[in-house]
Image 1 (cartoon, rainbow, N blue to C red):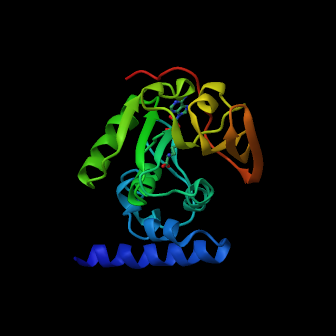
Image 2 (spheres, protein in one colour):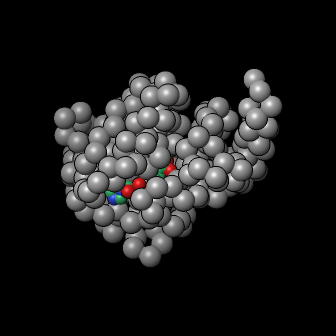
Image 3 (cartoon, rainbow, N blue to C red):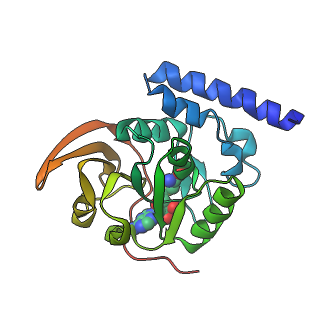
Amino acid sequence: MDIEDIKYKILRQHLVEQLRRKFSFDERVLAAIGKISRQLFVANGLEHLAYEDRPLPIAAQQTISQPFTVAMQTHLLEIKKWDKVLEIGTGCGYQAAVLAEMGAKVYSIERQKELYVQAQNILWNLNYQVTLFYGDGYKGNSAFAPYQKIIVTCGAPTVPPILLEQLAVGGRMVIPIGVNGQDMQLIECFGKDDYRTTRHGNYNFVPMLEGMAGK
Ligand code: SAH
């Protein structure tokens, strides 16, 4: 381990301690965050900010979610090994790495080509077996449905019905709902057309947009 790695490891431990003080997250979520090199996912030149608890810019005017938000969404999902998870909004791929680190089988969709390509490279280099798609998350991905867990990492105006259809019975979906600021909603599916929604705080996400962006 070189001196840079040691420096990042210490910063990462501080971040985990900070998150633990803020909320009693599932320790398995914190362990995953404690393992993943977030500095590899942020834009070049911002590596020194990678372990602050804040969102940061990535390519295509998007953001890497704040570590607290990643921890909360992952905590609410209650990930179990081999869970099939659909993520909408791969971005740089950090959240997907956290899910994969916890043993989930991750399928993630991104509408920005540039980010899709970047995430593919980073996750491949880190040896995470995550399946990425360049597409429109509003359509979900019926090929691998149903999913035990669905996570949306962009702000949706309302819950897309197709995503509900692709959620397994007994499954959990975590989705930020709202246009100017979002309400973190957890939707649990107990049976066909039998859902229970609970709210888990206010957040600010980039918007969930329809269709695919070019490039
Ligand atoms: N999961 C990321 C967060 C990225 S920000 C992380 O780990 O930090 C949210 C991402 O959602 C952006 O990259 C944006 O392009 C993407 N997005 C927005 N609308 C989408 C849609 N309809 N389908 C797929 N991705 C979408």
